[in-house]
Amino acid sequence: MAAQEEISGLKDQIVDLQSQLAFQEDTIQALSDVLVRQQQQLDSFQESLASQKSQIEELAADGEVASERPPHY
Image (cartoon, rainbow, N blue to C red; front, side):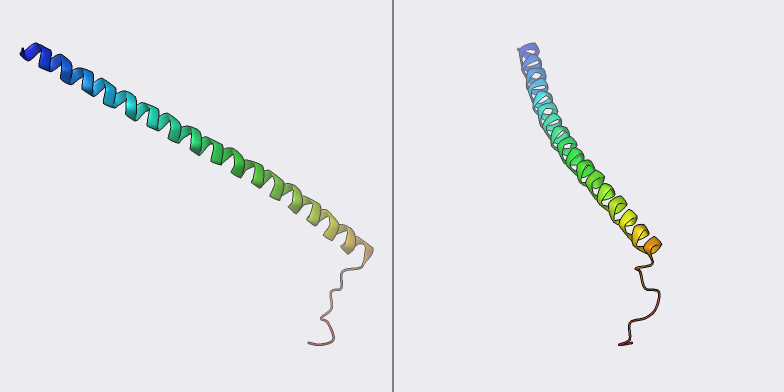
């Protein structure tokens, strides 16, 4: 009888471990999905920043960017 109880206990432990593993796999996948979305946003922000930087450089080269304070100061 003790052997059957031990086997039953081991089976329960295996089921618990399998449940924990499934939960961890789901959590890892969710975190991975979030990371992918954040990387896409970061890439988009970097592209936007580069575009704005080039626009500012073009304006500066054309002399359209004033280096003086506006008259209301």
